[in-house]
Amino acid sequence: MEDILIYIILFVAALFAGLIDSIAGGGGLIALPALLSVGVPPQVALGTNKFQSMFGVFTAARHYRHSGLVRFREEKFGFIMTFIGAGIGALVVQQVDPKILGYIIPLFLLFIALYTIFTPSLGKHQTNSKISKETFFLIFGSVLGFYDGFFGPGVGAFWAMAFMSLLGYEIRKATAHTKVMNLSSNIISVIVFSIGGSIMFLYGIVMAAGQIIGAHLGAKLAVKKGIAIIRPLYIVIVFATIARLLYTQFF
Image (cartoon, rainbow, N blue to C red; front, top):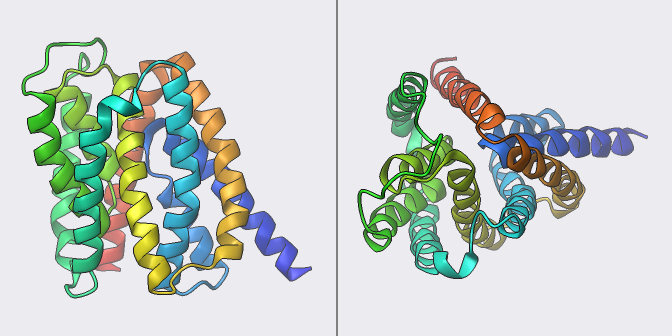
């Protein structure tokens, strides 16, 4: 009976995490505490979280592709650069304490939140690109891929901001492309965590089912409502991530 209750808690948490993450990122704010609350050790919780979220990210990316917001073939270079960056980050994090980033990242996220709030036109319409796609992915695929593999919180916000401000994407398109890059870094992270034995696959599979349902609903809602739902939820998630990071560092 106790096991069934745990499965229900994890399934429901993953469903809501998938729904939120497919729209604005930040699903880990729900899924990770849920895993920790049922007694999963921190390192294993991180690995299991990456495993279950991979299914939600794939579901969301697939839905955005079918909606015409992203073409996988055109994002191969970005996918590869992000994969490489995340792989290096996942290896480095095993040798270096990432705690210092917990103090720095909230400042960057605060800037993103304030910039989004005071620039209401950001992501509203497609605008001209400021740099080439190749240069963009060479820089951000490497840097944000590394960051996601090394630390991770808020990476979706960084990707979305980069897509909107530098490639001129409207917010739905930016969200769609963010999911593709998230998928790349998730895959390599899951491989690394699997090798290290840091994934509880039974819990992960239960949560994956919730993620798939939630991500499908969330992506569908994002495509339908667009900026009206993505922008406010995006800002809330950024502030929630800041709060979580600060709480983790100081309490």
